[in-house]
Image (cartoon, rainbow over all chains, first blue to last red):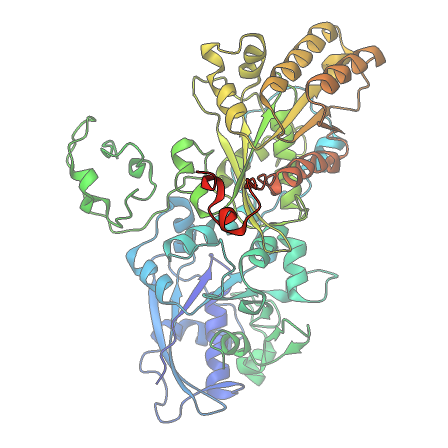
Length: 281
Length: 318
């Protein structure tokens, strides 16, 4: 039995819970490269996914995961070659990741997870990231009037924020970046990909368009076969907490959602593909 | 945390990691040793991990845990007050954020993202009614060493470099060019002694205006002073704010000083109207310092032509 360790990183509202809910639906009811083992049956404790299941079956968006939540679901998986894996899938309030960045401090629980993890999965919702990419152009177009206004944006550019966060996590996990990294493997999932409006084809090019500095940081520090960038739309369409989507109700949530694969840029219904890549199935 | 560690290189009280590598700093012998600072009792033990950088500009102590990891390039940015040194650096950071490359190498990290972001914040604005402004004056301070901004780069040949950019206040250099051993020029002396490459800024705006005589004097004195120390280290001479054209005679007088004192200097014209010019100046500097000039081969003189003696080298005649 293999028990791979995986670290799921995503800020608040990046779609961790929806992905967990939809991934479970796939593994259980519409398996692809990975499925749940029959002998073990259903995981003994599904309570942390209870709410998201309810909402998705009714075609509604799930609520926010409470800030201080940390729970794990044990997923007994088997791949197409019969290899058995026991994966602990984490779920937590995304604010915890923000607080790592703000406090510049990583708790022992997170650290031991970082050190043991074979792969890191990062969820980035591009449309909700703050960037200031036209600052220099503005300086040219609207020349300075010599005054020094007091109020300036205190938010970091999302590029710098993600790079600093990855630097913090790499350092604490004892990984130097002088040589290119082979471990941890890194899967970047661009979540809510249905709302991304880009002319670029492959998800890695879309990441380069939205967050160029982060893209450069990853390209330059990981060896090319140790990271991959995926498009992810767990739901396929935007859902709201109040109105029901009939497709979800009639066809079932397991029929909804897709990923965009890193090499071909083609849509794929198997939501477990990024996980399988990370676990080298 | 008001208490400090007895180890002067340790900044655990500022939220960084323990210099000696203990995850819980309370277990560190240096922390337990009596410190000269006040002795307040510890409130709670804390087992969280931290990192040895704060995101602000780096000081000398920070270099001791950064530089050993590989080859580094220290670039000294020299110029009078308000000549555009900080603007040059900030514009380069903003270009990197947009995906451009310095020295055709990929950005692979920075220990001073906090410092870069706070410089960049002066150009950014959230309110469209408000105008952007150039980065503010770098405070003179009394430090012996300027704050260093950091960029890590990796090129296509897999060569990794830590580039450190010394952003020092202009007054240090103005003072240094007048009186080399002035106490307030200690930071300038440090930069000139340790830098692997230099960017020297001339302010075209001031060279056009009513202070053009004084500015010419300052610029020439800086060039001539640096000429005494630079040796063969690369120098990029930047005509900053080049949307202004200084009078021809003033420009040629400065160029003459450059030819006499630093004949190997490379000239660049930069303007924030064309951000690529600022990128080109830094790229050129880093390119020139990417590989240090190779050491001269040691030649063992042949003292006599018999193979046995040759084997014994210069002791052969004895």
